[in-house]
Structure formats: C-alpha cells, structure tokens
Image 1: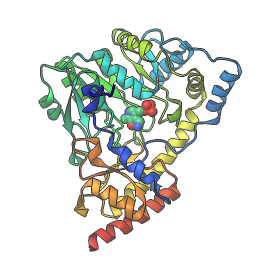
Image 2 (image 1 turned 120 degrees about the vertical axis):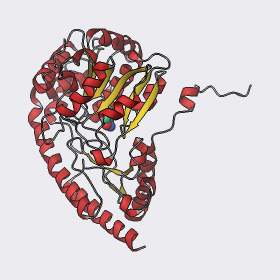
Image 3 (image 1 turned 90 degrees about the horizontal axis):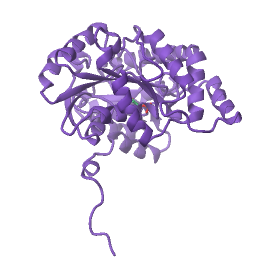
Image 4 (image 1 turned 60 degrees about the vertical axis):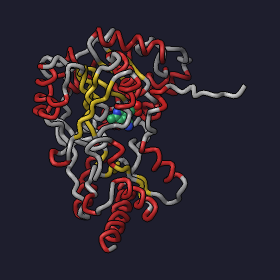
Length: 391
Ligand code: PMP
C-alpha cells in the first residue's frame, strides 16, 4: 500500500534548517574558497590528549561509563570549574558529561520546560537554541541585541520580555556569533532581574576559555545564582576537541537529577575514549589552551583592525573566535553580501540574519584560521567592497 500521509511530527516539520549549512554546501562545490565560515578551531587536539584516548583503548577500556560520566572526569571537571571560575559543584550528583555542549543544551531545555513555558533567548545567538526550546515544548521568546550596545543584553529589554510564563533566560557569552563578552557588572544587572522574577539562567559558557581581555566570570559565581543556573560548557572550543563530542553541565542537584534521567535514556553516556582524553586535557592541557588563545587574540586584533580600515564597522569582541562586522555601508543584505562574496571572491562568511534578531546588517567571520588565510580573506573582501562601491 502506498503511503498517503506524512509521518513527520509537526514540531519537526515546522523547523527551519540551519541557515549556515546552505553556504557550506555551496562553498563545498567550489575550489579555492577561503573559509571564515566554520565555528571550530583550526588547531588539532593536543597530542597528549589524543594519546590518552589511544592508551585507554589499548588498555581495553571499551565499555559504557557511568551515565553521568567517569567519576575521575567529573572530579577533574569539579576541580577545573572551582579553580578557573570559582564555582563549586559536587562530582557525585551535580555534573553530567554530555555528548558535546549541544546535548547539554538539549537536556537542559527538556528538563525544565513544560508545554507552553517561555524561555527567553537573547539573539543574535547560536542557531540551535530556539529549535531546541520548541522541541522541548516551550516557546522561545527572542530579544534582539544591537550593535550600538556592542550586542550586550540591556536590563530593560530583559524586564520587558518577562511574563508570568517565563521560566528561564538563555545566555551565551562569550557569544557566538558576535564574540561579545559580558563582564561582572553586566551579569550582576541581569542576575538581579532573574532573582527578582524567580527565574533560571541557562548559561552557555562554551567559549569561557577564549576570553581575551579579562578573565571570564561565570554567572553561577554571583551571589544567589548557583541555585538558579544551569551551566553549559565543554571541550570543543577551548581545548580544540570538536570531533570528540564532549561537553558537560553543572547544576544544582535537583536539576542535575532531572537532566540525568533524560541523558540515561536518550544517550546512556558519552564516548568512553573521549572521556579519557578529556581527563588528560584538564590535568595537563592548560598550557596548550593558553597558547591557542594567544594566537586567537593576535588574529582577532588583526581582523578587527583590517575590517575597520576597509570601512566595515567592527567592534572589538571580548571572546570566542568570531567578529561581527557591519556591512550596512554596502547597501546589501547580509545574505546578499555573503552569497555575492562567495561567488565573486570565494570567501565564505555567514550572514548575520541566520542568528536571529539583531543579526541583519552584519556578517559572522570566524578567525579560527591561519594568519595567511585571514590575510588572503581581507584582501579579497577589500576588493569586493571596492567593487560594490564603484557599481
Ligand atoms: N554553544 C555554542 C555557543 C556554540 O557555538 C557551539 C558550537 N558551535 C555549541 C554550543 C556546541 O558545541 P559542541 O561541539 O560542544 O556540541
């Protein structure tokens, strides 16, 4: 019998595919493309970390781990979070090792969201947030930050978005795509509102290691915030381990317990060899992290200065490995800019519009690329802009 109906759930049918993919797919068909498109380190994971994973396999550690992850790894994470960010979590029942920060965000959403609950999502932001809120049965209430404020959430914007249905605010800093970092004062203003309205914060701090101008402050370290924060972090960015698929959550025991219920049924546990690698990364990997960070900082300064010289207004972002220059002077939309730049000059960037409110008029450029590639990209973008201005 022929199939006459769609079996696809409405929630999935209505989901838009990620706008980033379209450009990667197009770029993949072309030769000689300089890509500032991808959101991942250009460094290979440290050798000692790779060796630790290999050694775990050689020793025959090929079984499942505990659902929440190897206790040795959770102890290392607890120690790392306490010493790096002054936040204290019990390795026994407040830390879960996940399949990337991506899965951590998913279980955080599903653990706290009842049908119709509102989660405030601050945009421009990582493309997975709103779809994951909606898959969890919630409603993503989006706030757009603007270039004028350096893409920082303004307290009055947050106040205005809160309703009786609001359950949580999702923050990401240093931010993808803007690179914006929030300092302690910014976070305190947000925390006061969150406490006043008795809300939760989901803090995606995956780029915490890549904060260039001052040490990262975790919102969970502020007075009264530990009990109302779900921290998301992981190894992909700072430790250059995207393909290992390893992240983690830190949250008070009750919320961690709820997330673990989902994790144990949906995922069982994260990859065992990856967890052995991560133990090594936390024990001996910080020198490499610092050295990658030094390189990123240099590249950031070069790219920001170059874009401003080309007339693309670009704020100096405090972290991550993205810059978010304005392309408004060209009169093109961000999608037109990205498409024409790719076809005419073979440089891949991502249009700001795919990151939600506040993103139009900007492009995301990742500087997780060699200096030579960045210099070539700047040359081509300069040529492109000149052409657009004379047309
Ligand atoms: N959060 C943000 C803000 C990101 O940019 C990314 C990756 N691009 C993730 C989470 C997902 O990271 P992971 O590789 O750990 O799943």
